[in-house]
Image: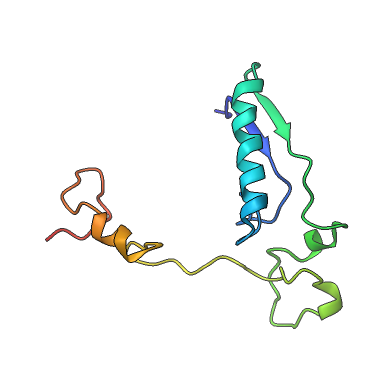
Length: 117
């Protein structure tokens, strides 16, 4: 089943809400996504955001491509995206702030990932 409406941003995997640490860009993207909720009336609509990751599309040649044991030449990886950029998976919940961990309800029936006391 397809999404009823979608917003497309041609950014590398993991950067779909904007560049890490760029709050202005992230805010702009989220505002445009929310505007899409209001403006798109036709089911199956897709809004293509007009933002670009870089001046050229060279980053697409190396992003998420296995290096196969060989080093990627710096000139071929102008945006530092070669190889797998995903962060490691954890077996325990990860929180942005210590207060978030304290606020997590270990008795929450839908929070099955939290360790039970």
